[in-house]
Every structure is written in structure tokens, then in C-alpha cells.
Length: 327
Ligand SMILES: Nc1ncnc2c1ncn2[C@@H]1O[C@H](COP(=O)(O)OP(=O)(O)OP(=O)(O)O)[C@@H](O)[C@H]1O
Image 1 (cartoon, helix red, strand yellow):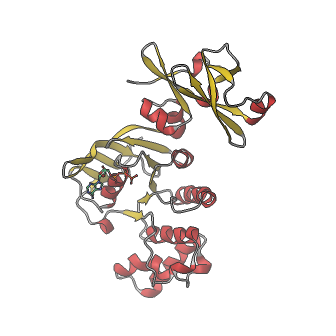
Image 2 (image 1 turned 180 degrees about the horizontal axis):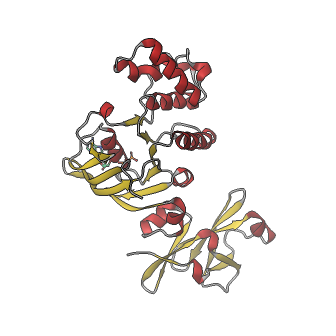
């Protein structure tokens, strides 16, 4: 439902010389939503985020927050805040002073800004580290400080540019949970740029898939995963096979494929790859038409009758799991 607090991108366009980085984007982001901007390298995600933040000028169109056109305002006057990929902490300042920095720029007295910085450090579980310098912190801790620093101005919209990409996979999953918790607690809009499908599906209330400077599809993660509109979205989200049938493309989820040992299914082929994934096993079948189809089986099903690379197998799928794709 549209409310007065939404963020609206209206005919938003960004050109760098001849390159169109963002083309005529129209989108309404409901207040308090966790949005992930997802897409391959160069599709225009960062340009969109930087235009919202005010770090990049808008070539055409407008950005409206709470009904006000903020496109021409300086970054600090927009009601948005940005957390950068490399955290951009000041190495010579303590954690507390890093967090309090933007209040200092706004002329807030030292005692007051330190009280506020300590509250924010509490929020991100970093209170005991207030007197340290950034180089005395782990990557995950630096990230929490960067978050606290971005949140101290009480933004209505927090912009996060690949916030988890510098972390190791274990920490990335932990911080994912923290980000989501924080967003729920604060109730503000988060716009998180990522090229990780898992990350977007795990975090977002709404995923916006971009491709070639435009929005290819947007919606709740489950709606997107179960009904990709185009071949690009199906392939980019992963976990789907794109199959040509009667001159049209259809998508079938890899975990909905039915595998038969030997011949007998709709499409026959040879097992080309087997990947053990813990709870599941992923098989790649190479068909006569050199098409590769993936099948995901529960671990127990696979090992009840294991297959080897080179074995003959065939696949079929229930008609109810066929999802037609737009051309
Ligand atoms: N400052 C710039 N000058 C010229 N071209 C640029 C500039 N910044 C981005 N571009 C171009 O605009 C397009 C979109 O870039 P953008 O950084 O928004 O994509 P992205 O989806 O965020 O990519 P990545 O995931 O690699 O960061 C690309 O073709 C890029 O080369």
C-alpha cells in the first residue's frame, strides 16, 4: 500500500557519457521494507544506490522521499545514510569518534554526541570497543562500527553497498541475521546492493532484479523464485532449468525434476557432474542436444541408489511444476 513515507524512483536515468547505467527506472519502495538490489556486474545497481544517496547526480528523473524531491539535495540533507563496502572508517579516530563523526560535522557538542554514539554502539553490540581504533578490530567488528556510524543521523533510508562482501562465508551468514534483526528493530527502509542470490533471497522483503540498466523483475523472494518472469531471472536466481519446448522456454526448478536411473524419462542423457552439498546432491545431466540439466536430490535419495559420472539417466517433471517464461 502506498503511504506518505515511501521512497519513489521516478523515471530515474543515469548516463556516463554514452553509457546508460540506469534507464528510466520507476519504482515505489514501501517505507520500512528490506530491499535487495540484485544483478550481475555492471547492471546499474551501484549507480542507482549512489543516486539515492546523493553521491552521484541524477541525469534525468527524480527521487522522492516522503513525497519530497530529494534529487538535488546534498547527501547529508536527504534523510538517507550510506554504508560503504570497505566501511570507510577513519583509521586515526577511535570507534566512538568514528560513530560520532557526522554529529561533530553538524556541530553537536562532544558530550552529547558521545552519549548518542555509545547508544548506537550498544545497538550493534560494540559498546566494549568504543576506545579502540579500527585497526584493532576484526572485519565483522569494523562492519558493526560502520553500521552504527551510518545510523547515527537517524536516516529514514539506509543504503548498503555490498555490505557483506568483505567477510568470510561464516561471518557473512551471521551478519546477515544481524542486519535483518537491526532493520526490523529500527523499522526503517534498508536498500542493500548485492550480486549474491542467496543473500538477496535470505534478507529481502522485496528483491529487485536489475539487468542492463533496467528492472527485470521485482517482488518478494518466494514469488520471484517460484515465478521468474524471464530466462535471465530464472538463470540468475539459479536453482532452475530453462528448457525449450514447442518453440517456447519453460523453467522447472532443479529440486522438482524427477530422475530415473537409465532410460524412461522425458529427456535422456549421461551424468556429467555430481556435487555433494550436504543435505542435497546436485547432478548435472548432459543430453543428446548438449543441453545441461540440473537435478537436486535429497542426500538420502541419491545414496539409496548412487549414480556415477557417465551413467545413463533420464529426467521428467510434473506438469504442475512447469513455469512458462516470457520471450
Ligand atoms: N563513473 C563512471 N564513469 C563511467 N561509467 C561508469 C561509471 N560508473 C559506472 N559506470 C558504468 O555504468 C554501468 C553501471 O555501473 P554500476 O557500477 O552502476 O553497476 P553495478 O551493477 O553496481 O556493478 P558492480 O556489481 O560491478 O558494482 C557500467 O557499464 C559501468 O561501467
